[in-house]
Amino acid sequence: MALRCVGPRRSLLSHNALGGLWPRAKAVCSGAAGSEEIEKKLLAFPGGSVDLVKKECGIAVLTISNPERMNAFSGTMMLQLQEQVTQLEGWREGKGLVVRGAAGTFCSGSDLNAVRAISNPEDGVKMCKFMQDTLTRLLRLPLISVALVEGRALGGGAELTTACDFRLMTPGSEIQFVHKHMGLVPGWGGAARLVRIVGSQNALKLLSAAQKVNSSYAEQIGLSDGVVSPEGGTLVQTERWLSSFAGGPAPVVRAVKKVVLSGRELPLSDALVAERDIFGTVWGAPTNLEALARKSKHK
Ligand SMILES: CC[C@H](C(=O)O)C(=O)SCCNC(=O)CCNC(=O)[C@H](O)C(C)(C)COP(=O)(O)OP(=O)(O)OC[C@H]1O[C@@H](n2cnc3c(N)ncnc32)[C@H](O)[C@@H]1OP(=O)(O)O
View 1: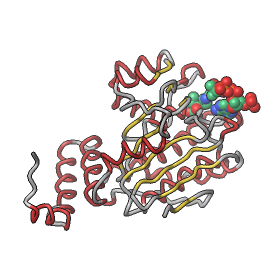
View 2 (view 1 turned 90 degrees about the horizontal axis):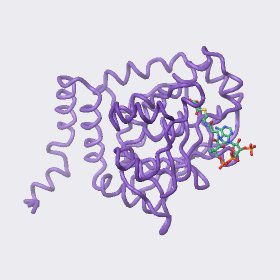
View 3 (view 1 turned 45 degrees about the horizontal axis):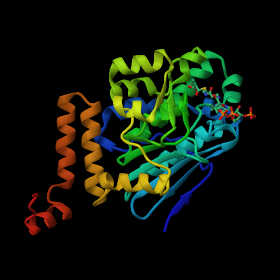
View 4 (view 1 turned 180 degrees about the vertical axis):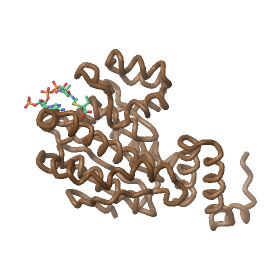
């Protein structure tokens, strides 16, 4: 049975999915405590929803939905995204996450109506900090995540794709960091993450030319991890693809994500400490003991 979490249950709390293992996450997310002012402003821009379905198989689907505006993020959707990430942080049985847009397109970034209304630098920076915190927490979930890119992923939508571990694209879909055309640079953490995904040379090209990236070019530079064809259902195929990484017992899948995350984000000495601690959670645990009893061979 699927558990559906729709709508605007809100929390002002900042969460740290990796608990004590993760000193830096605390530092990055701690600013969320002072975010009440921007949260109030975001409430003034309603529309759309961010919907979460958690399935018993351990895979959740997060849908960005505002079809009249090509799934642009209204203010309340930004707040809902934060709430759904909080839900996922507390989902102990979770192993995988698909992030997608409604109605055949991914997301066209911030709702330009909200952007116009809060175009002063002070509010812009607060909004950007709010989204940075949420997307950092999304990337740090102990779940293996994939963005299913159909149609367009523009501006903040392109940034959202980089807050997932993997990206799959449909033929004809495009990711475009349109920020330069808007006289901007990414502010939701998308530039920092893009550099880590495609390297600084490719990131510089994509950002400085606001280049449209189709599925084959994305795969060539490592931005996309594969193409999903519309036949057979894009979500079904994406979930199947994800199952090959997020299959197996939740404690082991979550431990895999955590060691990779610590290796990616922490200095080596801290990453080694974190890896030992995470190792301690699976060593001698039921799955490990069962594998030993089976005398597994890996031919
Ligand atoms: C730059 C970063 C920044 C940030 O916050 O950090 C942002 O993300 S700003 C937003 C960046 N995105 C855009 O500028 C998107 C602009 N829109 C488009 O380029 C096109 O609408 C496109 C390519 C998404 C879709 O084109 P298409 O021809 O297929 O459809 P329409 O243009 O007719 O769009 C349908 C309808 O959606 C409205 N729309 C689309 N995107 C947004 C948006 N981001 N905010 C508000 N509204 C949006 C569009 O205006 C149309 O509405 P209509 O009432 O029919 O004019």
